[in-house]
Length: 113
Length: 115
Image (cartoon, rainbow over the protein chains, first blue to last red):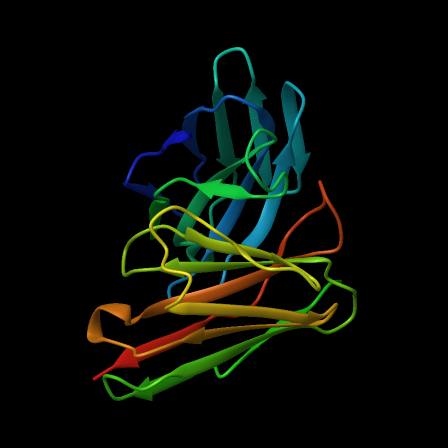
């Protein structure tokens, strides 16, 4: 099975940098996704990591260490609109559906002025 | 980009009735569609995976006779909540993928309230 852990809530200041961590345990790791979800809306794709290292995309970066079962999402130059839940999801090739995503509980980020 | 729509966006129904939710991929062919459920302040829980033209694969604990999934074409999947109860009230989200190993694109979600 999968065991995906994220902090439940975080608060950060506008203009600052915040790092949201995600640890996972899965038997057939086949990629890790980060999604942003505003309240009452569907998740939107932020990043995808399948190899170790850092993927940078504008203000958002995502890091993966497969040996440690660890990823983080880094948000720079925080804006008020970044207040949302951030979901870490893992794909497991040993599951019935190789495309299936298993989500963590999500981290609710609040950006304050 | 790939767009997935859901209809309706919200629905209120009485206990004991059935509700159908549609999920459509608007600009690509979705060989696989996924149905998720999300309760307030919780993350997405995968309910089932459906491939076009075949029976859906349900996750453990999800009643296949209660949550009927049909994936009749490469652009449409439907989820029917039969004999709905108040505890079925939730946010139902579908996603679609055009192939194995490829990204899932999420629909906007359907909020179901059963009274």
